[in-house]
Length: 218
Image (tube, rainbow, N blue to C red; front, side):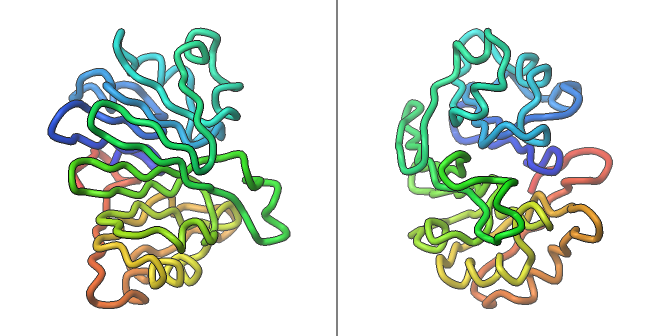
């Protein structure tokens, strides 16, 4: 379920998962408190302490990288379980893998340094969901296997353009791709429909309502 830019909600058979929730907490009013909250990194379009606090329940599990934990309020930081690149954990029956997310282009290195930020792969039953976070088309992404659904960032100058994103998809071959986080700066917004035309016809592309009024199902 798309919510805003990089914020989304996943509703597996049991529980509710919030990923990088930001913005007015009222936009989540149709949903219960988070059972699991995942934070990829500390940037303001991925971590908002007020929003996250409003969505946390008494039993919410919060997972983040160290950089995000360092920017959380004391209460949130105490509750956060930190995992780093290539580490794994679980939430009930859901397996969670932290995937490296970083910039490789020389003039973008300051945005997301290697080793700091996370993407995630969620193993929900027989379904593997990749959440890219903010990254370029790094080797760790290209090496992914058996991804059923990939949520893929694409904006400039902060992450990657549609050509790089399409090239990565050609390597790791997810069954479904959902473009997100595609508004950029200084003309760096990317066109998810143009991205879709670059992919093998066997790969399905779904578009979410990331920037319009109201938030709908993907």
